[in-house]
Image (cartoon, rainbow, N blue to C red; front, side, top):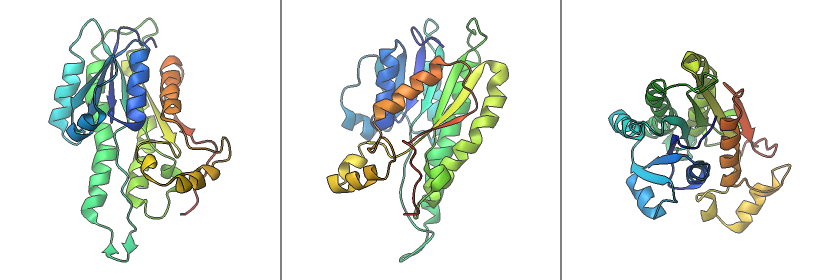
Length: 254
């Protein structure tokens, strides 16, 4: 699918995987609406050329609908691409020294990571389905972000791993549901990526994580995630699948 003269939505676009993806899509000719929370947008500073930051909470369906409608309003640049990168990853054991897992925290993680992803996917698909298809009958591509934790969740990752596992489980039925509308759905499950969160830990800790990656023995770069997004968009036969981007990493229990 061609990106030039189209519109794209990226959630979590102010930093990390989302920021790299928004810049890559804009570089390929798309007009990008980058959704994120206000404080994250303020911390990011000026958006790169071709990217417009929009203050949106993916947990607020009304706000998501308004922002999606705004992104889809340009008839000369139809909405074709959605990449869901917004997410949170707090850690807490089911039974820890302070007692049982905070149930409100568990619900919040699922609300942001899984329900937020579904909300954006569904409301964006509604608008993409209203566009004219290309010569192959295709109208758009939606990419969601899972994690290797969906397969090998570590100690303390019950909430995060189950939210990302939900995204893995969503991928195929979403692709099947949206196939009649000419919309593909793909998921990327990243390993340990060098995001701003990782940059807050010590170099020694990062080196230890990198040593656990078979090859290449380093942390993933957000640009590699963005590059895979571009490949998914370009390859029209990729649909309904989860691609691990992890250097053959398989996470240990802790």
